Every structure is written in C-alpha cells, then in structure tokens.
Length: 348
Image 1 (cartoon, rainbow, N blue to C red):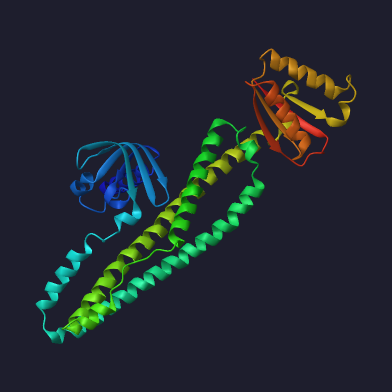
Image 2: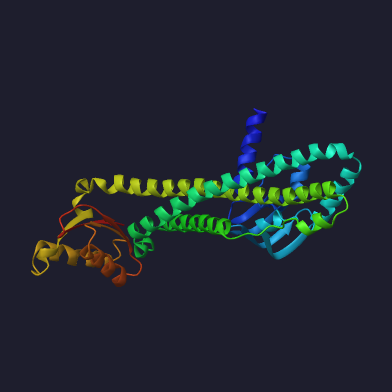
C-alpha cells in the first residue's frame, strides 16, 4: 500500500511540474520533479512559479520562488543546454584526473587508455541512437503537420465551445514545443576538442594523450546526455499530444452520438432547411427560417447546432447567424447530406 502511495505521489509531482500555472518544478532536472533521489535533497531544488512557459529546451518562469535559496523573482529562465554545460568546470575536472594519473605508474596508462576509448565509443553510440530517434520524430512531424493544416479549418476552431478551444490551444502549445525541440536538436552544435599541438609539445606524451582522451570524453558525455534529454522530452510531449488529441476526439465523438440521431429530436427543436426553397418566401424552409430568427430575437434560443455538407452554403448560413446574433452560440458539424439540405438543432 505504501508503494502504491509513493507511485501515485511520484506521478502527481511529475504532472504538476508540467503544469502551465502554479507549477512545482526542479531546477536541477530541467523542471521535471522526480522522487529518484532523497526527499530532502529533492525539496531543496524545488521552485514554485505562477506561470511555467516551456519553449523547447528553454523554460521561462514568471513570478517564481526558489525554495533552496529562498529567493523571489519576477522572471527566471532555465536552459537545458546550460544545465549540461561543463565549460566552467572542465579545468577542475582535468586537474583532478591529472592528479589521478600522477598517482599511477606508467604501466597502468594502457589500461586507462583502453577504458577511455571504450567510454568515448559508448558516448558516440548514444549520440548516434538519439539522432536516429530524433530523425524519426522529425519525419513524423513533417508528415503529420501539413496534413493537419490541410484538414483543419482554422476559422472554425474559434467557433467551438470553450472546452474544445482550450484543448486546441493546449495541443498547439505541445506541437510548438515538439517542433522547437526537433529544430534545436538538429541545429549545428559545436563541442570543445583537445588540441594536437598540446600533445606534440608535451614532455610526457602518454600522459598528455590520456588527458586529451579524458577531455574529449567529458564533452562527449555531456553532449550525449543532452541529446538523450532531447529524446526523453520529445517522447513525454508526444504522450501528452496523444492524450489531449484523444480527449478532443472523444468530445467530438460524444457530440456525434448526441446529434447523430437528429431525426429523433422533437419537432420544435429541429428544422430542415432546403436551399432551393428560399426563392419562395412562403415555402416551408423560408417560413421556418423566419420563425427561427424570431425565437432567437425573443431569446428563446441560446445555441444552434448546424449540420450540413462541408460546403460554402453551410458555412455561409453559420456565419450569417454569428454576425447577426453576437450572443448566440453556433456550432457547425459536417455530414454527407444533400448539398441543399441543412439541419438546425435549437437549444435553450
């Protein structure tokens, strides 16, 4: 039971760290809160922020409080690249390794060299695997995004109800972050490398060669960690994208079930309009449209659901209602009706 409570707490903290508002984040883990280290150590790195805005590998905190340093800031920026940077530490790292080599005999240098070569090879493989995964994500995004832009009518999004608009904004936010991560990962990134001139001028070339191997390994290790972090964050965002898209599709599916049997609605809640009849002011469609306008003016109706073929005629009818009645909620759904037929559901 205790383990279940721990897992639930761990998941809740993880989700909380991705919250856009009133987030709890960990600066030492690029915002993500994980209980993989001692609790007192984890709490020491936490930050509470009013707004947590992620833009790829950069996070912006607004109105934030650093628990460790007990410091309040109106603005704080956290960069993933800087988190993995060792530019300010490399001299100390090399100095420690130099002392380590001085304590060893020359006979042990061969083992050290083999160990470093093995580590360098492993880091290069990690970078290569991460690049392969990023290339896959890039291909998927380059395939899916144009299809979405071709299918989705941007103008119609703003005529959805509030919940669906919020979900669309969240999905857009996640897509932007995935795209930024991909672009940031494929841009040219330079890393420091050891110099051959130092090796050539060194009195102890075996030792200098090991120092250079260690220097290169340290930078490769940080670069591999950075690329793995890119991949993990993209994977997290893809899971979020699938979740929010599934939720949005579920809402649309529920609407389809709700309005799928529209012919069973009561007569005073459903009207059928035929475009070919509007030329006659005394036709059934003209009379019903006039009565509908009267009901809206009397505020007997607060919402219309318009269902018709995906053509200009259906869009024009919906647009006319929106322009004429500002406070009227209008939703449009498309179906394979006859091109002259539109069904309108009325809700109070």
